[in-house]
Amino acid sequence: MSDSRRVFAVGAIGALAIGAALFVVGRGSASKTGTAHAAQGRLVGFRIAAPPVNNPDRPPSDIQQPGGVLGYAIHLGTFQQELARAGFEYLGLRGFPRTAACMLALATGQVEVASTGDSPALLSRARGDKHRAIYLTPPESETWVVARKGGPTSLRELAGKKVGTLFGSTFDYYFQVVVAKLGIAGIEYAQLQGPAALPALQKGALDAYLTPATTAALWQRKYGLPVIGRLSEVDPKLKGIGITTAREDFINANPGFPAAYYRALKTAIDAIQKDKEAYFAWQSDATGVPIDILRASEPLKFAETPIPEESVAALREMLEFRLKTNVANSWFDVREWVVEPEQNRREARSEHQR
Image (cartoon, rainbow, N blue to C red; front, side):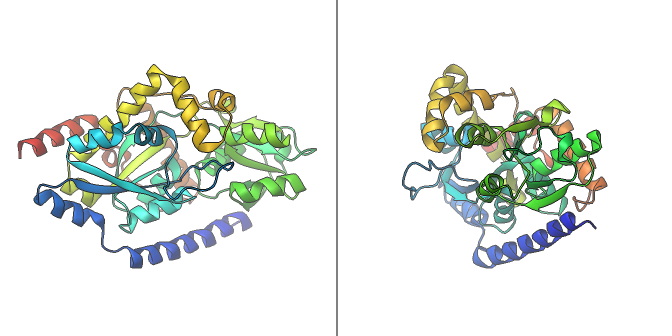
C-alpha cells in the first residue's frame, strides 16, 4: 500500500471511530419515532444531514441551512409545504463539513436522510450501510485543479508534485481516473480540507488542490491562484452527481416518502427554471460567492426524473473503478439501490390506499 493510500486507510478507521461515537449518542433513530407519529395520525418527522453553507462576511447563524436546490426549496418554504401535504415534516439540518460524516450520521440513526456527493454515498453502501438512493442529479458538478503561484501550469506537470485532496471523495475518484488516463507518475498526496489547503497553496507547501469549480474560481479571483485543469476536459464523463439517500427502515415504514421528497424538491427546480437570477441571488447571499462566479460555475442542469439513467450508468462505472482500486469494500447492484420513479409512484399509491 502506498503512503497516500495508507493515510486513507487510517482516515477510514478514524471515521469508523467517529461513527461509533455518533451511534452511542443517537441510537434512538427518529425513524421509529416517525412511525409512531404516523400511527397517531401526526406528521412523520425527518432530519437531513448535509454540509451547511454560510456567508463568511456575516456572523454565523444558529440555524444551519444546506445550499443548492435543497437549500433553495427550504428557503422558499415550498419544500416544507409539499411534504406536509404528504404527511411529512422537515425537522431541520444536521450540518457536517464532510459528506462522509453525513453518511455516518445516516448509518447511525442521527438522521433519516442525507444529501451528499456521489462517492461518499456509494462507498457507504459498499460498506453495507442500509440506505436507498431516492434522488440523483444529472452528472453536473465540475472538479477543477488549483495550483500555487509559480507552480505547475498543467495537469501533466503534476508528476512528482504534492497534490491535496480528500481521500475517498468524488474529487479523489475523478483525479485517479485522470492520472491513469494521462499516465502521470510520482504524485505525493496530502489529505486536506479546503480551509487548510488554501494557506498551504499560498505558502507553497502544496503544489495543487482538487476542489469544486465555484471554490476554484473564487480562489482564482480573490487570491490569484491559477486554475491549471478541469477534469471533465480530460474525460467528459467526470462530472459529479448529487445523491439523496434515506435509511431503509425509514422508507420501509414510509414508502411514500421518496415520491413526496422529489415533489418537494421539484418545487425549487421549477422555480429556478422560471427565474435563475433569483436563485443565484439567494445562493450568493447565503455563501458570499459573487453572482457572476455562480453563473459561470453552476450549470443548473436538471432531469425530468428523480433517477436519470445517465447517473445510474455513471455510478456503476464509479463502483467498478473503486473496486478495482480497492477503495470500495464490496460490489452491490446500483439498480437495486436506487428507488425507481415507477416504484415511487406505486408505493405512494399503495400507502394512500391504506
